[in-house]
Length: 476
Image 1 (cartoon, rainbow, N blue to C red):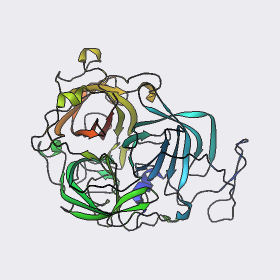
Image 2 (cartoon, rainbow, N blue to C red; image 1 turned 135 degrees about the vertical axis):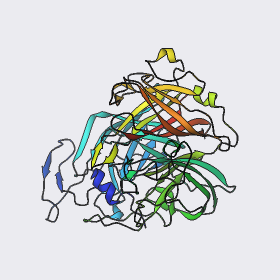
Image 3 (tube, helix red, strand yellow; image 1 turned 180 degrees about the vertical axis):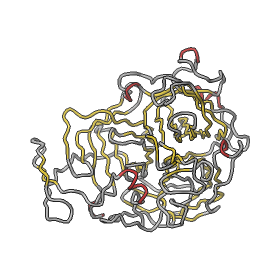
Image 4 (spheres, rainbow, N blue to C red; image 1 turned 90 degrees about the horizontal axis):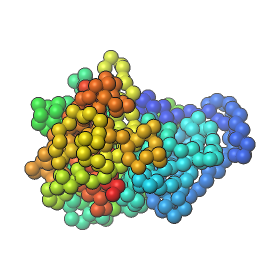
């Protein structure tokens, strides 16, 4: 059994999916009139406006991220529409989730997809219809293979993975993965709920996956902590995953998902946010894009099911069969998201995170960028966020960041364990207004013939100190 997003620490962090929602009277959409009704526990009625329905060409699963419960996205490139359905609202599972957003999808000249919201329902049950569509939500997509989405009402981006079918991997395939971090924790000496420790918990790893019918086998699971927090060398997490795990792929509200240790289902979290049996949910796309929601755990000191990643879960891709040409990877053009987890967890204080859409590789010439404390090497990419978080106004983003992938690991194709991120004084989330850098680990490979780069680092020089994720899909 599985109810992704009912983790109590997640609910406390965001309060996105409320277990007791105020009822609302809703009159026809044309008038947009709203009247409050009685609160939880009383008698109330609710007239639901049927949201616009699309006929999706593609179903994607999105893991729990911050204040957003696990959800599905549908993007129809024929009708040019989209819809997001969230699971975890206080409704019966028979209702099959709540459509929180739907509207139009339009592809920009730089390949980024604008998601214009025409229908929205909040966690308190208030419905709004937008005409013209509300802009400010974006997707970077390799249609039918992988996508990254940032919604206007969300504090975090989310990776989304196709789930129209179970994976078919008769010959074992090696994958690389990175943790998707929660709030940074560099102060505690034990694993806690709702945060991620680079000293104690998994930062990256590899796994061999094969399937036989609906049975999915995870073998040779290898996990490492962030080298920069272990004397420059990868360390073993304090609670490592089993070296092998047998799971099953079944059909669920999210599409065809791999459940560990149980099948993925949805149940009502209940008015008291009652926890449910632990389970991780993993989706693998047709070209190997991997996304894990780490679910919940009942083991003390281990707030997630330790299959692959820590924190919210993991993002991954097929391990290249031969060493990559790092200069070729660094010279491609990319679009994606810059993510700051927020933190640190220290004395009950935490700074705000961020989620910005950006681009990299549109200019590999350091001279075209603002002052960066970065070397000139063939392994470096320059880029940054789009001004005002709006890619519709410019073909490429600002140039106020750089990623130096560094040297590819000699025994793990596609792994860059000593990457570095360089931040200019002008980057809008630079809280100290001076240039600096921080260590990271990156993985790179191909998804449906396009390069992808995923990076995880820990920024203790900026303000606030926080974990960073940079997630890029090739756009040229």
